[in-house]
Length: 333
Image (cartoon, rainbow, N blue to C red; front, side):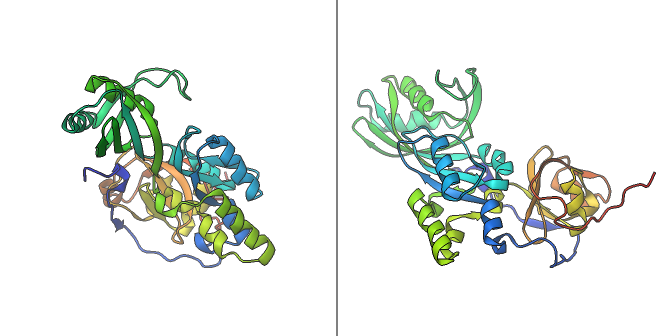
């Protein structure tokens, strides 16, 4: 693995098991959904401003887009800014896949005394890999020691007592606590001064949209019937699942999955080359629609080599039943 990437960013090829075509009369390419359906099955990569809580900005997005439901991908403290993907409407069913994805932050850490740059870099590098972390007293989780993976720490600049660093880490890592622990290891103490999230799963700063831009895009559509900016500000929920290993399935298998069935090997057409048993994966239609979130019961090689058996257990259905015709028959008895 490249030293400065989050695990899901490792490139994976799509390998083919079988061939089939898709019926154009059922389902829809995500980017071509009618605009109201597009919004209700969408995600906003919001640039969270400093000040409000993650829950507050999620509520504002819901109000701007006139939706009943919206859910964010993992809380940011009021003073923290940056990447906060917000799943909209029906897409909130997939928010757990983003909450558990890897994160990246740009962090400004204040040392309590000046320390040689070489020592700062060395100690920070020592924190790469699995670390024990006790969440702060005020936190959203039970306060117990747990292991979190730090994928990389890059010290960008040391200026007197200020240390600017880029950190890639597992979901649920507390950056305030990381800064405190680095300060203890250096021997002078430290605290987090400023923090900006730059990655969550597949979302990066390059595609961020702020609240004003989202509001403007919605008004352009409402008043001028111009969907252009709204389709740029809101993206299909499938973009928020692109970091997961994928399995492409036949049209005839889709409705059974939507009824909660597991995916059997004959229904699989293509899949990511790096799937391992117990991985969280996503099933997609041939049109690129997200069908369900699943737990893999086989690795890629087993899926390719075998003709019969259950490849993955369905955990969260994302597509409405009836979108594709029933391709299975129940036993009359």
